[in-house]
Image 1 (cartoon, rainbow, N blue to C red):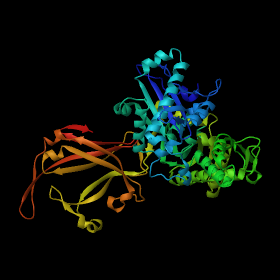
Image 2: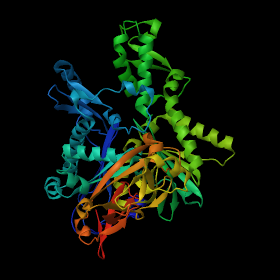
Image 3: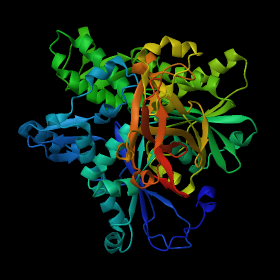
Image 4: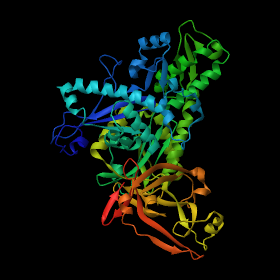
Length: 596
């Protein structure tokens, strides 16, 4: 038992409970779980699913490729490691199956840029949307986890029957995901059979970012985190995966960690190296008799050449054919295509540069000096990647005249870091504050101020509301500014009013939470930059009981006409400190407080 496990508190629940963390990655996926045999008083331990169908009989692995084969009816015929078996490949060719891979890229938030090579990502199969495909893969990997747990624990089958309705799921996702993507994943979890209803999904599906899960994994690995404990020092965690590079920064405070700069996400992971290699093969082989061999070369490069690439000075050979395949004009000999290490390094360069851009930006934004950088994720296991990142960081720090930064990667399975860390997040909950990436608030109408230049410019848009006050539309009221460090329990509130000519018009209140992605620290008007605002969520509340206590309010206009209106007061509160964004409407009926 590691020292980290030993320091974990005993389980105090009254019944068995199973926690399953699923990391569906762009290229590879994995599952970890808390022991299903946990009794009250025992210290929880984290297990990984280390055996999947289609893997070596006596081996196994903690991950499987995120790949599926569909038949023409849209049924999954093979997935994971099974999809790479010879029998699956032959059946796919004979029966016209359709391959689905790298589909997670289609969940990318629109606000995040992607490399130009993204156009080569395969289309989603058979008119399915990404939620359906994601759900199909969740169904498969969940079945694998169930089988493994049942087979790995004494009495596993009967235990699973007991735990069947008492399972909680932790789904990991890139740092850049927002509420829209989380809702897509919840729908996929329903389609995949993890839960049965939207209500179950809200209760039993939890989320954690890949960056935060990776931090928990690094702690679990028992790494030397002495630098984190030094006063004024920060730590950066880089989760370099197949699709995204997720970078987060923290400082340690007692036994907890605080996020000290808004987490970042770059779409430039390992698959984009493969896509650049594919473009290279297409360019070199265009017009040759081996032009049709590009898919085979790309597959061989991804599976064999890229993982072992370490030195620019060496030559590498990508095997794709047989001994009769020769063409010296395109460096093909005996079914192998020669490619220099310098050429392969060029495939890596855009990804390395993207990481360094984020690294330098976060160093500038961090209020604490970064003294340690941890690299996790499958991309980080490549020796060239890690050595180049270490060199880049050392050179940048030297140029700035700063002290040396320690760069390291855990000496364990880097590709299972996120799933393992997802369970640790649930059990240990080491991160207590997070930093808002965007500005959140609501569009509203504000009273006209004839002394305010900004109001004077917009005076042509004024209107008289039910209470007789001249107002301007399309204002923005900030509730939570960006780059704000937020504890898990802190609420950010703003008061609002709604007016109407009768109480019936006030019985339902709707508030739409918007986020601002522009450059201003304090945006005041939605109409100034409409393309920089997007809707996060809409919340509704039933104020019927409140309206019963409202009294009519009268005013006389400049023409001597009397008008009657009603006014209801409420608040909008945002809770950002958890890994999920939450918004509520709060109001009072007499002395009671209500939340919707």
